[in-house]
Length: 181
Image (cartoon, rainbow, N blue to C red):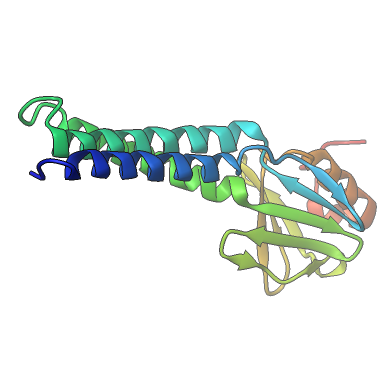
């Protein structure tokens, strides 16, 4: 266990890193539908992103508590180590998929749909290339001959997607999943 001046330096740096990461995660909160020049961006609203950020904050705070306890012993011998690690791991397991999905955006353009994800942007799916739209109960799956894109029912502005589909596609492609007019 580090002694002297090293303990407060480690605790201070851990705290600084934790707050920096929390600030960056909080930048993800927001989202929702946005209209820009020539396109409408559909994304998850504050609920999905906020829940992901909350899980991230809990995970970081738990890890910070573990590090502080490890170097200072403030919880006593081995009292909270395992519990804090379990809380951090569980929060991260739940929060990381929420953050990844919360960051994703779908662009509706005159030409078609574009999926902007965490790991890059998928190719444009042109309206005329769409062969089917299926409702799985959790999401709409748009298919072409070569590509597939999923639109969660939690996306803000999903009604605009439905309106565009009804305007640009034949009813044989989407069937009765959007309801009757």
